[in-house]
Image: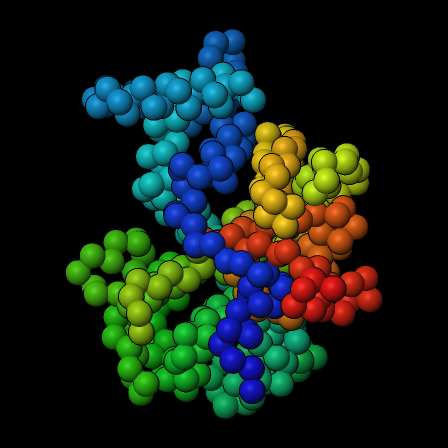
Length: 259
Length: 119
């Protein structure tokens, strides 16, 4: 039987050393590259200093002198490799990253939810693959009534977005040591129209799930938070003819505390 | 992607950059190579000599579930070890989430794992 260490990504890739890194954003090299990427993607020039056209509100914000000096230094450095950027513009991007740009995210979520519910209808093998589970396991879940399918005219079952999201979520929870049966029972009454599935109570036999629209989990004592957005984005790309640009799929699942 | 090997001799950086983008694009659906930055690596096997180079960083956003799939991890491993072996690198590094993974012993070109001494 493989040990946990043998299953680790480091072992599977043949790494001889592993270094734990601080949070990537914003001060690590990768964080700076991400910031540079954001600046190049967002700032547009219409004659003056390049700016993000969605920045339509201006406000005066006080800074500590050393923070402003740091922003000026970063702006000068980043400006050497791309569009001219000001310290306040970097501050705006950092604030949006920090807040998760929630207002935009909320609009995107409702559009995405509607589109995936309208467009996504996959065969069982494709649905199993999208959910990250074997076809055999997926069919067992369908036969057990855990996953719902839609019969087409040819009586061939197709699977919609909510069912795939449900299966995907169960797969994720299983990876955290939660039995599929327990996960299905807890999720069966969850409103998948809400973006975040917050697991508030976890033991081997029982889960409590709350579905919420905003990532505000203060007071919920969340153990695990599952974000449906990246799962549904991936589903939409699967069914769209134009694959489009890849979007970030990190952060599908967030573990708030050890289970 | 390095510009020199562990002895300081130039390597075909463009080839490795193209190959990294191809592999990452195939496995993860997209990748970005950034302009070279000055880099340095300390070669402890050669008495701590510093090897300076112009490193190209290739990044990719990865759906976490992909890294649970053995074929994808195997292909990624194959590329990283090939880079280390054929470009004569002392170490190949990859950052995944919040961990830096350093590979110093490379599989041989038949895919057999390196021994404890890197053979």
